[in-house]
Length: 179
Ligand code: K1U
Ligand code: ZN
Image (cartoon, rainbow, N blue to C red; front, side, top):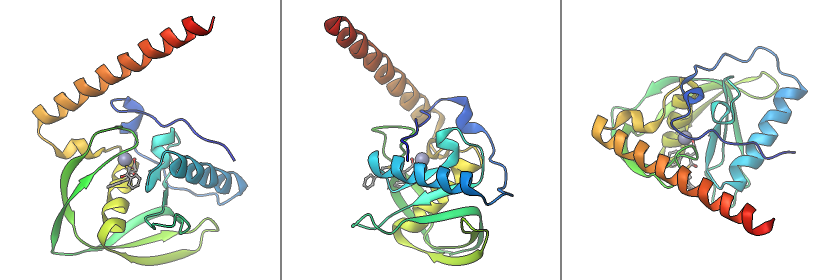
């Protein structure tokens, strides 16, 4: 197993649209296992292949408190949405430290395949519904800040760029200290 680097917003590769999975082989299972390890280590409750620069329709999610209920969705499609809309505070491993409220359907039905290509249907509500919609947006090249106003989005971009510069400066200082 391996930890994979997570793309950080505003990396343009986060805007790529993922291709459907057509081959259900060992490489797919290995990628799903590596994504799960990366998600648990982050820590997060979900991860889309797009975020680790793999542009295929693959998502891993674990919203359990015990972190032992991994769910893998290949080629997911939403087939039903609730009329009820809920507002949740969302986070994203591609936008560390940013949390914003987003409105989405409170419940969705998803049809997807597992890692062997078997089709299944699942009804999602609460955090799972939010998470699956958030991850499916990643597969479409969309991030949750795309739902925010232009002003909020540019403030977030500025904050993340500042954060990145500070991290680079710190790493440089630590490397200089070590040499
Ligand atoms: O897509 C991602 O980057 C994962 C993201 C999923 C998500 C969380 C909350 C609302 C919508 C989508 C995260 O996991 S962010 C981290 C996070 O929320 C979290 C981390 C540890 C425990 C619980 C939540
Ligand atoms: Zn995300």
